Image (cartoon, rainbow, N blue to C red; front, side, top):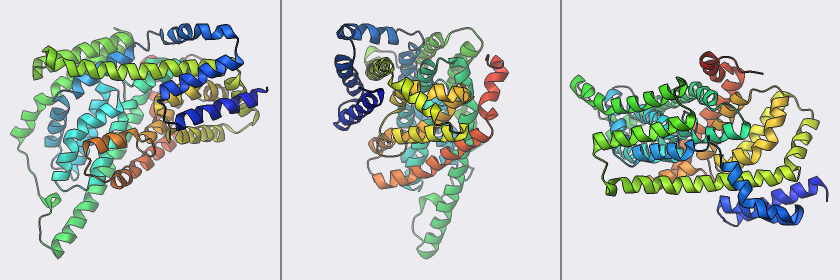
Length: 451
């Protein structure tokens, strides 16, 4: 049987099993084992557990459960709400300041949690009710939180970037640094949109008030004294200490990424114990349970995805696909565009973890041959996958929002997130035109990449 026929069967079987509703990890593992049975030596089945273990026995992957522990410690305590409240007090006088506060709170929390759903849930549980209470539309409130939550896979430390670094065999420290510039760019774009959207809703409320002088909460003018502003600063300082400690340890050369993740987890536990009194076993139970569940789920997906990629490589599917792409002799930018469209389509159905581990063996060799910097591409790909977190049908952050605010119709949530999808697409175009937005900082800190 030709490689093309085997590849089509492999892809078709994967789509069929996933369409059945089977969990992604089990779906990928089942397809891989079935094709090992029919197309590989019989002895290969005896090495399934060994292959999975060897692929996962990476010191870099150890950072994932430790970063999840850090995010759970912050997310399961009142730390997220305090961070949001402090930012709201300082930005109260800016038009749309509440929306901007949510964007900034998501960015800071994302830089500590490394997880988009955790960021979305922690900030949204406080931010959405406050925005709704002050007259912001449900779609706007949901869109700001859902989009802000996506920053969790771009701003370091990012679990998604850890996986990309493993799959692409690139420097994790350089990749983390490369995500900072684009992450700040998205924060500015989201905050700018929040101001413009607030002004539009404010004017609409003024027109409605002129026609019917009823109660319009968005027209109320909330003021905070300087004493209230400075009184809120102590709520932010612990986060600054936590974030600074992790970044200094990583980029100062004092610790490896995995050791830094362990340091972040310990600092987060010390923070919530000393400030919020979360140290008793009954308080730590939900944090450890959440960490164990999310880590187990993610590591199972990683293990099965790596087994899936191993079988794909053994059957020469990934090599043949890469050769076919190269043989098309597309210009480098058409090649990049085609691959990003593929990632967008996959984002309709798959989470970022699966997209990276399934596509890396196929798309990275042609991109490298075309002269693209794989660190830069990792950032671009991450932003494109961010779009997948807030557009249907998967749209993980959309379902997190629905869980936080079930009173907001799903249609409003989706329409509220679409402008942010367009802003992310604009950011991708900008990164293509000005790659230094991503590459400048890692080159400055770590020197030019070795060729």
